[in-house]
Length: 622
Image 1 (cartoon, rainbow, N blue to C red):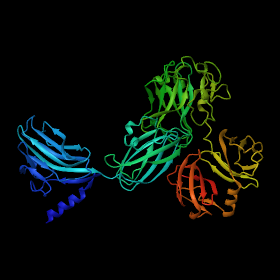
Image 2: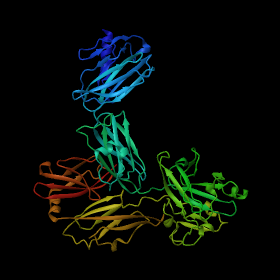
Image 3: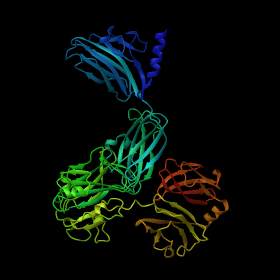
Image 4: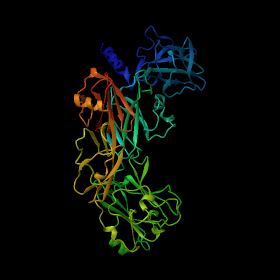
C-alpha cells in the first residue's frame, strides 16, 4: 500500500514538470502488465538494473514485429524514451510511428541502435494521436523504458511590466507573470512599425529593421528583471514582449505587450582631458572622471588609428582591478619618458603600448561597454581616424602636431564629434593649445559637474492656463483657451541664484507656436535648452473644466490616473497620447492604470456622451 501511495505521489508531481504537461508517463514498473488501452507483443521484461531505465523492469523487444502501442492522446508535441541495444548489430532497427488521420506515419528510424543506453527526445508531427514502437531484428534485443508523451505548458500571462530604471545607454524593466515561463522581447526605435507575433516567435529571423536589443527571458519566478542594452541617449524606444510556453508556443489569449520609454540625454562620463605630444618621449594621455562615482576602468578601452588608417582591431585596455575615483584624472605615460618628467607628473600607467606612440595624425577614441564587452560604444574622440595629415584644432591647421592639447576645465563630458570638439576658433573649441614644453595644465582642476537647471516657479499673469513642467525631457506644456491672444502673453519665472534665461522672458511673449530658450548657469558656465509646447482648447472645454472642476490626480502619477469632476456614466471614450502625438491606449472607465507607461509626459483626452471633451496633460514618474 505504501509503495502504491508513493507511485501516485510521483505521478502527481511529474504531471507538470520542466514546463511540460505529461499526457503519458510510463516507467513500466509492472512490466508487460499495462492498462487495457495499451497494445503490445513482447517477451518477458528485463529485470536487471543495467538493462533498465530509471527503475526495474524495462520492456524487451526480441523479435522482428514486436511492438508497443500507446493509448490515444491529443495535443502532444514531444515524445521521449530510454533505449538500449543488447548485442545488436548495425542492421537492427527500431521504428517510431505516429497515428495521423487514420494512417501510421514514420517519425524516426533508429539504426544502428546504441549498445550504450540513450535518452531520445523527438518532436511529433501535427495531429499525432497515438504512437507505435516496432523492432526489426538483425541481431540482439532492445530494452525500452521511461516513455513520456508531453505537450508544452500554457503560455504565461503578463500581469504587469514597468520600467524600473532608464539611463542614457541602458534601461531596466520588471515583468510580472501569472506563472513562471519564457518571455521573448524586442527593443526597437519607436519609428519602427509594430512587429507581428510570429516575428517574436522567431527572433533570429527578425531582420527587416534595426533593433537595439532582443532575446528570451527564462525565469522560474513570477517577478523578474531584465536589463536592456545598446540604447542611444535621448531616443524613444518600444519594448515588445511575447510570453510563450516551454516550446515557444502561444494560444488564443496570447498578445504582444508594448512599453514605450525615452532614454536620458548622455550623462557625464569619462573623457580625454589631455593629449600631451610633448618633446621626445614625454608623452601623456590623460582621462578624467567628472562624475561623483568611482568608475571601473575595465569597462573602458581606447581605440587607435595610425596615420589615417582607421580604427584598429586592437585596443588599449585597463587592468580589471583599476578604479578611477570621482573628479580624478588618470594618466597614461610613455614608459621611456625622462626621469624628471616622471618625477614631476605621477603616472597611473607607464607603458610602451602603441596607444602612447602618437603623433599629430594619430586618432584615439575612448569607448565604453555596459554589458561586459558584448558591445562597445564611443564616448569621446580625439582626431579623425581616416585623416593622414595633422589634425586642425581651434581653427589652426596642423595644431595637433605642434601643441599639447588640454581640455578646457568647464567641460564635463565627452564629445563623439571631433568637428564639434575641435571647433573653428579658440572660443568654440573644447581644447586649449599649449607649447610642447608646457605641462602645467595637467595639474589644473576641472569644474565640478553642473547642477540641474530647473525652475523654482513659473506662472502666467491672470490667465486660466494649464501648465505641466517635464524636467526629464526639459519641456513645458501650456494649454491656453482659444480666446487668448497668444502673441501678447507675459510670463513670470523664478530661478536659483546664478541662473539666467536667454533670450530674456520680456522678449518672449509670442506663444502662437512652440519655441525654445536657454537656462544658463553663469557660475559653472553650463547651459541647457527648454522648449514650450503650446496647446489651445475651445472655450466650452475650458468652461466645462471650470464648472465641473475637472482635475487629473495624482499628477505626477505612478500607477493609477483618476479624474475629479467626471463620472464613468458621462464618459464615451478616453484616449492617452504620447508627447509626440501617438495614441498610447483607449479606455472607457476610470481609474486608468498607467504603471506600464514609461516615464515622461502624456496628453489625456476625455470624450463625453454630450459631445463635449476635456484635455489635460499628466506626467508619469518611474
